[in-house]
Length: 248
Image 1 (cartoon, rainbow, N blue to C red):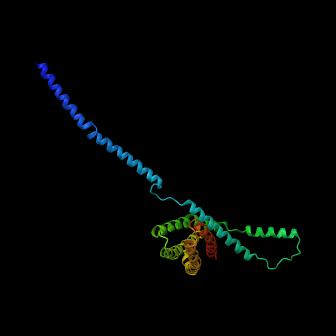
Image 2 (cartoon, helix red, strand yellow):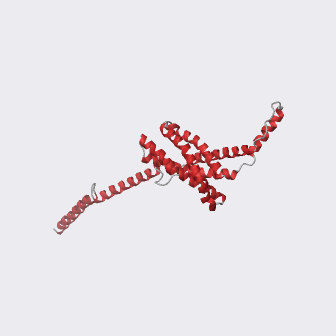
Image 3 (tube, rainbow, N blue to C red):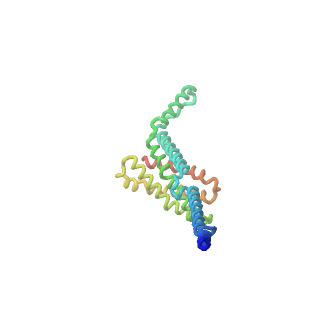
């Protein structure tokens, strides 16, 4: 009799225990819910990491292509400016006669090339190139992205606003930065206010005359795929003007 009672109690306890296991550990139970919740959190964290890696981790990505392009254009403009300046200083005072022999003409051409290659100010070239690579390229890229973000529609109103903001904000900023950059390299920061007073306003006004029609053509007439090349061509001439102004 006692054995039967003991077996009955044990069977009741094991049944309750199995029921509690089913409630707490089965599918949809407490532990199952925790496991499913943890798995969802892992999936969400992986998705967020993949999206961060696709967008650069949410940090700043240096626009290398634009910086290299701006540096190369600044170097080209400065080279043209230096060669033009040396050509004006070393221009021959008299014309050669047409009856000179071929050997004399060859020697004159070699002297001509040697004159232009010698005396090149490589430090000045480095100043302009570093300005284009470190400052103008990344800065203008961020500026144009901001314009496109704020004024995305291709309307006449947005076109005029872009051109106006380009001249009112970007133009003075470029002149102020390049003047300071040039004087910093030369160790003449104390002369910067005088440089601003003497050359900043004429350079800015000259830039208005050049960049307003160029910007209008770029945003209005030039196709999207050709705008970079068009503005790059204009930048060569503008860098030539800036380099000449910087080194008066």
